Amino acid sequence: EETEVRHALVQFMEKLAPGNPRRDSNFGWNISSDPCNNRWVGVTCCEKPAIVCQIILDGSNLTGIFSASSICMVKSLLYLSLKNNTIRGSIPEEIGKCKNLTHLYLSGNKFSGRLPDSLSGLGNLKKLDISDNNLSGELPYLPRISGLKTFLAQNNHLSGGIPNFDFSNFEEFNVSNNNFNGPIPDVQGLLTADSFSGNPELCGKPLSTACPTGRLKSSSPKEFLIYSGYIVLGVIMVVFLALKLIRKKVPKEEKVPKKEVAMDITHISSDKPSETSNEFKFGINRPEFSMTSIESSVAISKLVVLTSSTVRALRFEDLLRAPAELLGKGKHGSLYKVMLSSGEILAVKRIKDWEISEEDFRRRMRKLDLARHSHVLPPVAFYCSEQEKLLVYEYQQKGSLFQLLQYGSKEAHTFDWGSRLGVAASIAEALAFMHKELHEDGIAHGNLKSTNILFDRNMHTRISEYGLMAVENQDETFPSQSKGVKNKNPRGGHSYSPFKLDVHAFGVILLELLTGKLVQNSGFDLPTWVHSVVKEEWTVEVFDEALLSEDASEERMVNLLQIALKCINPSPNARPSMGQLAARIMKLKQEEESSISFDAGGGMHMGGTSQL
Ligand SMILES: Nc1ncnc2c1ncn2[C@@H]1O[C@H](COP(=O)(O)OP(=O)(O)OP(=O)(O)O)[C@@H](O)[C@H]1O
Image (cartoon, rainbow, N blue to C red; front, side, top):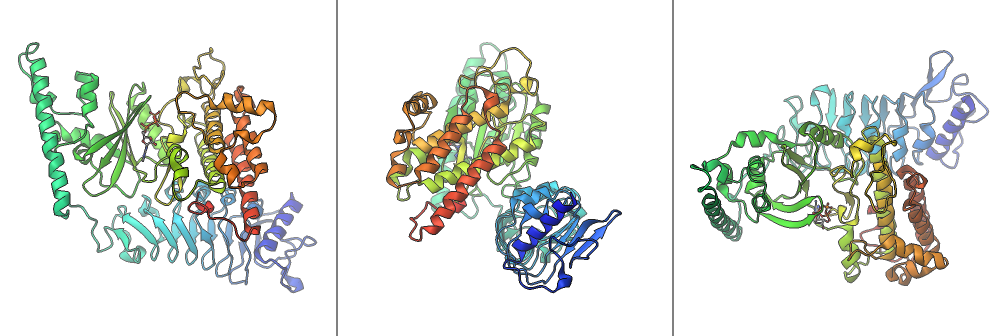
């Protein structure tokens, strides 16, 4: 083990200081000496027998990259400081393996790219300093690290919202001079504006810029007309429906309390669970007065807003009032596009027929809220009563993978091979992470398909509806594998693990990416078709013509096809795990990327492969 540690350290230094700049003999960091006994520069050892527990290489002219996979082999390492060097590249996902780290200082370097989500899994971290780098993208969900006392991230290009930290823990907190946006969470008066300044789109205390609240106040006359149109239409519909309802009810009952006429989300389904009245709740328009006659306080308190920064102040009332448009009615419920008066657009999923207790549902939501990955779209809020379950997401403007495959080729940027591989890698990486985090709880995605793979405005892949729908008997059958044959999934064979069902579904998505054919089109059985073509001999006929005509690497396409076929293996146990899949696809993607960098005139990729 000792030599393993030594090797890992030497490797780490080779990557940090490539080209072996000449060091004097006292520097150490070579295979033939011992880090503790020979006192390598920057290394401190503790305990007896001595183990490496601290490395400080501040201002040491390090110009290479940070090899987390090497350094994290040194399990005894608690303290790592590489301040003020010129280290480049990203902070790798493997940093998540440095589980014992309590102090990580990476400030004053040239780190770029997104922070890895695995950072939030460093549960022992007390101090994290990534300030003065070129880091960008959203923060991973750092509030998971309950003991974090210092977080310094100033002077980067980080964006997105500030997560809901428990600020009372902090000794130091600074995110100034970045591109963060949205409202600042409640800092409980513990921090000053200096911690947040220099982020033009941040608002709320302790900054002096208040967050926009007004409803129609600032809207243009045109907008006002649209809104009044909605309201008038809404009023007409409500009056019409109310009259209809009253007429129906009067012969049976003496008196109809006004309350029942109003579209009370908690009452309608209990009183009259008919499709029409249900459907109306998120009908086309929500007029202003729809909440006035019900116990709005009860309803409001039931809308649980999760740790999203964009719609922190969301109230149930706002949801009900806002104009809504029915986007789809799937097997499991309906999806509405809801426009808030603040301009925010939300997607609200109404789940039907899910027999889960309120308590279990809440617990599930909390668990999901803790397991966050940048490629998984987190719900911003949920509502739960015995009859109703609503999930609120941010609306994703760029549509779904389904749409991209269906219409993408007609658009200016074709959905090229590099981008498809990028999407596959992102999904695999995200699911591997979620499966790992939620394995104990048995919460898999459960409804993976190309309509649930969405793209945000930067064309980042975001998987939606994770863990929303229990797979048939999911909760019962996991983890016990010994129950009777109950599974109704037509393609899953006798599968019991919801995770293996996700793998199957992922395989189908891979097939869609490769063939350009969609399973949801008129009951077309894509897996069977692919099998039948492949059985003939390895043939390129399965592949999407668009891919063949762009001269994509046939070898890598065949590789991905082989991976897909493993995923859809009828025997669940023969399917690879999401972790294995992520590693293989990531490798394919890297091969693809390095082949492109040799090809100097490489074609244009949709939005840049690296983003996807
Ligand atoms: N947050 C979102 N932003 C934008 N579009 C979305 C969002 N969530 C879902 N959609 C799109 O809205 C449509 C309807 O969604 P819905 O979830 O009802 O369909 P589904 O996934 O096919 O069905 P189900 O999930 O019930 O099996 C889909 O095309 C989906 O891509």
